[in-house]
Length: 345
Image (tube, rainbow, N blue to C red; front, side):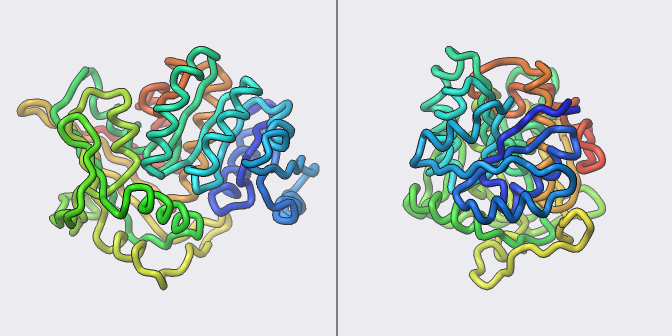
């Protein structure tokens, strides 16, 4: 448990940030609420039960405000996108404070920038930085690592996202627009051991999801953060991501509403099944995760990561993806009851 340690949450009043704040409290941490909008921070603090939480407004273009937000915190979680704008300044503040940094970035380019720009400095400082510690990028990487098991290399990894629906938040739309602009509207895949940008339309096919979902139409070579996180530490020259066609269409439609809560935790009715297949020669291994609400499930992923970092249950320092720094099978099992996880032959 958190034992009362303070964890700064930048972007605390956002859709995902609120789930993270709630999960931190549930795990015994004390969230420090931060972000640009002081009024929204105060409103969030007032809505929380028990003793009042510390509110520390901060902006990425004001390093002193970020330093104040992180002062005395044991770690910082960045939930504020677009991460092309926020990741580097908050990481810089974390390095100045000498504390771990975790974010929930799904932006491919922002995650690649974190690995490219901070790996050496973070390792030299002995600071842990975990980008994409979320449903996209983090969960897929953990599942791929768990499926690999004792393999040191594989020929290919396939990460298929079976979403019942996808009602994107305003943050998802904003981050997606920035990411598409940065790559000139092209899609990106990881093939032949490198990122490749493509102008052509992605393929469509049927993916054989396990029961009860069963075979579903998917968009192949879908641009996902896993093409950065998985190759950052696993020797797999082909990493392919897939998204159920219905979810991809809802994301791209301008009139799809934001997610709406249907239970006491504020989760939506959306369900997911993530099916990962790794292949080496003629052998195949598989890992499957099931759960509900891709935004809500990011919170237990993030907070489990923070807890493991602060209790020394890590395998390296510097910039590292979830599968590299944590014991992947153990981490995934620890997510119960939020995520059900199984390895399949």
